[in-house]
Length: 148
Image (cartoon, rainbow, N blue to C red; front, side, top):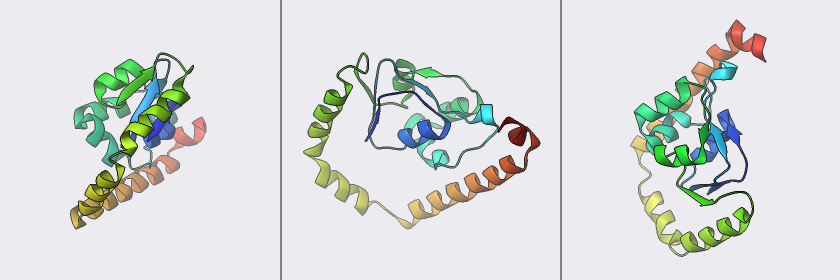
């Protein structure tokens, strides 16, 4: 579960979006792009973001540096639900939702464990290798080094 009680950008956004459940309040702003830093990113986003939003939206989100409101993020599939309008009461809303999903958690965990395949391991390894290679290229880039 990722419960976004504040804004998130780049790796912070990607890490949050990798969860099975992503919740926010209405005032949260996400910017899942690394573009402003001239980085590629290495939080397995090449695996998780297309699974969450689809390849087309994942490309749009990472090729531009445009912030998303929580409402936009829900429409794109990046966030599952907005639990309340603002940070007020968000913690209580998160706890209430966790209690709801906790009921079927054992079955869900077993289902996920049963579906870990060699193909999954291979795919996630390819994503890691690609991301780390792209990050090395970013680190060697003068534009990145100027910005940091």
